[in-house]
Image 1 (spheres, rainbow, N blue to C red):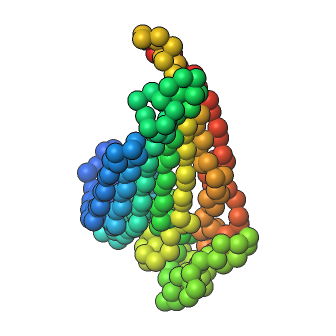
Image 2: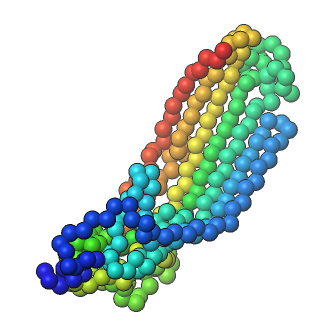
Length: 272
């Protein structure tokens, strides 16, 4: 226990708690591209792409961004500097909206019953594609230092963590090389980076779609019907691999869905 006490940030006292300490540092660099085009026939397209890298030594403590473990070694904040847990190297956003050329004032079916049935329809879609966020590998708190807790990390063996052919997305397949890590000895801190520099979680992609129709009941009242499909293609995004160095399936991925399946909703709105 004496050896463990010496690993504490302030070994001459039993317990010290720090709140809202400004000890974190982060940086974000990116190349961003946005292209927008509105066509004459009711078609609008918006495309965005970001190539970026985020680096920090602490994580976020919010419900939206997730939580992060404290510093592994209270004497070395810079030892936790790595790619950020929110880092996504490539991000793509694409959206489109198309007003069908039918109905009053349009090119086709601008009069009569056909204009009311076929007019007022608008289709839209929104697509996202992101590379996976960095992987974090953990090790038991063998130091019992009360500093890193579950945030303790293993030691590197010198073997690359990334597989030569990349991660395998199949049930119980190797996602990264477990031989690249070894459990940290007692009363020591692991030297593996907080987030791995060369292995990411599986990438994510999603397509949402919508279809709506607006009818004018009178000059004052309008009725809008809208149908929306979230994850319209019912695409599966897989959860990441096992990352605890003591787990029997360490380095392997067990296929399980991390995103929500297709969801469809309808709405009817009266405007006046």
